[in-house]
Length: 275
Image (tube, rainbow, N blue to C red):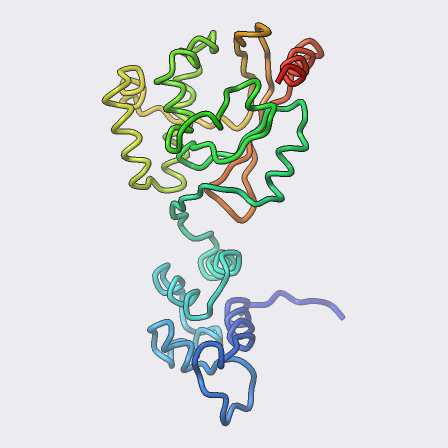
C-alpha cells in the first residue's frame, strides 16, 4: 500500500502524545475514562489555551501556533526536548529558539569516548567555551585543566589572560581574531547568558586585545582547521581539529585534535609516556 503525504502531521502528533500521557501520574481521576491518555480539555487547560482551539489544532484547522503557544503545548503534553523540537518543526518548519543551559558535567558514556582517543587530545566545551570534560592527551598537550580552579577552565579566559598559553601559540594574533569572531557567532546562535555577558565584560576590562577584537564585530565559523603549538617539553606540535555538536545537548561541543603528521603523533606519544 502506498504511503501518502500527511497534511495534518501536527494534529496527529499532538493527538498521539496526548493519548500516551498517564492521567493518574498527572493528578487526574481515572474514573469514566473510555480512551487512553488525557482529554483534549485537560491538555488545553494545562497549556492555558482554548479547548475549542486545541481541538481545531488536532483536526488540522487551528492555524499556525506561535512559539509561545508551542512552548505551552510542549509543557502541557510533558514533551521531551527532542519531542519539543519536533513539534516546532511540524508547526513552524524550524526548530525552537535555543536557550542557554549551564552544564558542569558530561555523561559517563561521553567521557569514555574522550578517554578512548588515546593519542588525540579532545575536550567538551559549552557555548560559553567553558571546558567541562577532557582526556589525558588534552591534559598533556593543551594544558592541565584539572589543576585549574572551578570557573577558570574557559578557553577564552586562558587564551587572553595566561602568558603561558600565549607563549604556546606562535600565531597568537591571527588565532585570537578567529576565536573572538567564532565566539560572537556562537553566542548569537545559542543565546547570550548572564554568564556570557559577565565573561565578555571581564575580558574587555582585563584584556585590551580582547576588547579591541570584540569591538570589531567580526563573525566567522571555526569548526575545523589546523592548530600549531609550541610545547615547552617536546617543541612544535601541529594538530588538525574538528568540532562536533553533542546530539540532544545543543550547548555542548566535542572538539577533537589529531596529530597532523607521524612526527607530531610521536611527540604526543612521548608526552603521554612521560605523564
